[in-house]
Image 1 (cartoon, helix red, strand yellow):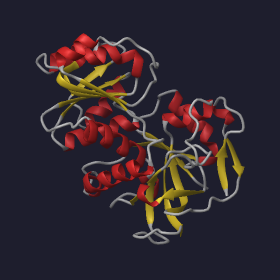
Image 2 (cartoon, one colour):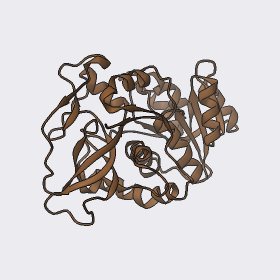
Image 3 (cartoon, helix red, strand yellow):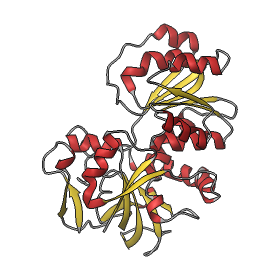
Image 4 (cartoon, rainbow, N blue to C red):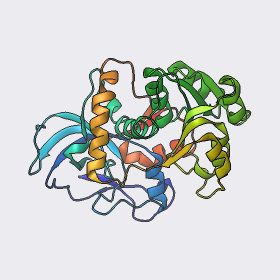
Length: 326
């Protein structure tokens, strides 16, 4: 088969479409013939040499894919060869075939094609596990999403609105904020021109955000804590703004607030399977009915993954960039 390899870490040009051995599904795994994958920030970090795959995972980038089951490994039940699926991966999505633990498979949702479905697994599992399973966003509460026009952001807006929450977003352009509003965002903050702490407080009668989904890390830590409501929950899922910052514990104590920080890729198989099962139970019905949908900015040939990485690094996209196999 062919896959995107990274002979040496570096810029987008480090991604090489090359012939590699076919994967073989092990115990509890299925082999998926990949129709499409999608680009995540973690893929860029891996390409740069900063985010190695966990032990035993595929060395190729790609944390989600869609396709058809080509073979079943030992001990797999409930799935059949030919089933159309999408999957959460620890790696290997930038390839024509990938071996996937059966617990990380999801059926193709009603009304979507496989290319659209490739944009779902990583973002849906990230948002559901952090915003709902950990931070317990409830109806009537306010969720603040940083990077509202990203793949994560566009999904978080839709899921929060689906459960009856109010949504605030930050983005860097009027066009991106407009797209967020179309998805249901109530409070729009241009982070280049406005202070999100002030804007969120103003829009919540001084209360602040009950839950914040943050992809920035250190750069936003102090202001995120200030923006939290009493009993607020800050969920950190990225570190685009650095890894080290000072934390005012007094403010945290006064607000009786909580901070969680998670990554998905290196979690044990059992934890991933539990998240995927929760997504299938709670989110898939919303996608089946069209209440929630993947937002795809563009499709790019997988062999030209370098071009897709440039788009994501320049942050000119809205939603997900999908990679399509030949």
